[in-house]
Structure formats: C-alpha cells, structure tokens
Amino acid sequence: MKYPYESAVINEEVPMLMLMTSVRYVAMHWHDRIEFLFVLRGQIQVFVGGEEYSLQENDLFLINSNEVHGVEASEDNLVLLLQIPLTFIKKCYQNIEMESFECQSFQNEDQGRFDGIRLLMVQLMLTLRKKELGYDIKIHSLLLDIVYHLISQFRVTNHKQINRNSSKDMERLTRITSFIQKNYMHPITLNEIAEKEELTVPYLSRYFQQHMGQSFIKYLNGIRLEQAVQYLLDTNWSVIQIAMESGFSSLNTFHKLFKDTFHTTPYQFRKNQQKSFSPSSKSEKRGIESYEYTEEDNLIELDKYVQAFQIKSFS
Image (cartoon, rainbow, N blue to C red):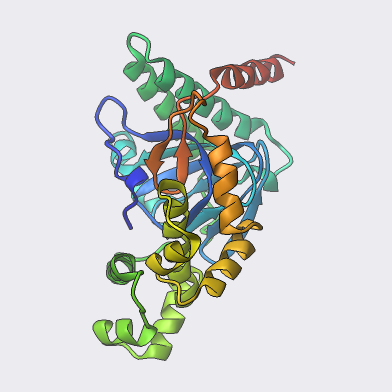
C-alpha cells in the first residue's frame, strides 16, 4: 500500500524518512521498511495484525517490515516517526530480510536500552532539521548506530512468530487493497472482490481477517474515514458532502464511525483543527496523508531530550 508520506524521496544522502508529526488516522498498510514510533506527547493507538497497543508519552514502538499496521488517535499528540528502508540496512547486514525485532518499551522495566534508540532518533531529527555542513555523513552514522542497537539488543532469537505476510499473500493483498483504495467512494462488496480473486466469499472473509487483522468492512470504512479526515481539513465542503464523497452510505453511518474513532463530531473536529493551524500560526501544513508535519518542530524540546538522556547516562 502506498501513501504520500511513504512515497517521499529517500535518496542516497538521507536514506530514511523521518517526521515530527501529529497522528490522526492511518489505515492498515505495510511497507518494506522498519518503522519506529516515539511518542513525545499525548497518546496514540497502534494496530499491528490483530493486536492493539496504547502508546503513551515516552513510549517507543517498532514495526517490522511487511507487518500490517495502522495508527489512530483521538487527542492531541506529537510523535517522532522514523522509517529505515531494508535496502539501506542490507548494504551492511545481508540477512536483514530474515530478521525480526521486538522493541516495545512499555512492556519492559529496564528502559536503558530503549533510551539508546530514543536518543539516536532525537539526534537524527536535530541533525536533519539543522542541516549543518556534513549532516548527511552524521545521518549515516546515526542510522548505522540504530541498526547496530537493533541487531545487538532487539533481535528476536527465540523463533517467536512475527505476523508478516508471505510474498504471495502480499501480492494478493496488494491487489485487493489497491482496488479498495481506487473505488472506496463507490459501493464495494466482499462478493465483488471474491469474484475478481476467484475465491469464495467465506474464504476471502477469513483470509482478510487473518492477514489484515480486521474485517473487510472495517478496513473499507477505515479507508473512507481516512479520506474524510483529509476532506475536512483541505476543503470547505459540508459534512454531508464529505460523507457522500468518501463513500459512506449515510450521514448517520459517517457520524457514528467518526465519533467512535475520534470521540468528537466531524464538525467539531474541523473547528478544532482550524484553531490549531490558524493563518497567524508560524506552522506550515504539509499534505502528508493523515500525518501532520509542521515546520515548527520545536527544536528546543528535542534539545531537552538530548540533555535529559545525557544526564541519565552520567547518573
């Protein structure tokens, strides 16, 4: 599945994608990159396969490559997001595609090894934002340090099953999800997709639940909800027009799903976001699918993290 934020250029000088961002809603998807989420403020919900995790401030979470995952949040938050492509890691560690990692700070009492990743991520963001002479060399150095930390401290060695899809499953899921993304605004049925894939409806229903971690209808509504959020932010359309354009069968259905997810109405959500990003704000909004990146990254806050980690290491 391709999202605009995942299509960002990852070039040889900066072989990664990094954002300081506010998360709203990201539908279930996957990619061939290792992804870190470091919560700086607030709370987010992360869905990986059929599991749900509640991340609080200072929590660090890793998502393995090709693991199906999604993110949503109903309150203000600030997250440091880092994606490292396997192609970069493979240059120095050939077996990376065979490895899995388990890095969930909230499930461990010993936070020392997680602080190492946290500090490196903060240093990466500061280096990327300041862009001082030779910053690309520093970025390579910090990325390799993160890779070393992963391999030496977070590699799964007990053959625990990580919920990743085979290449054959990924091909099928890509066809199905691509079709849904292109046609979410129209009535789509499981029967229609089953016919295209030459599968029975019961089998496809079980298959989708097993590999995507949620039912077909929940995923479809998630794609519609993700699009509706963008319309609320980027257009002046009425709520009922947004509901129809996003493929919802009725305004009531849209309202219920939106309120269940964000604990507010679409109207109030739009109003709150307009306050947060008023014309007088120094922040610059960038249309990055359901992740909101602002230029006002608050480097002072990141510097405080560096100082705090350094004090910890000497105490």
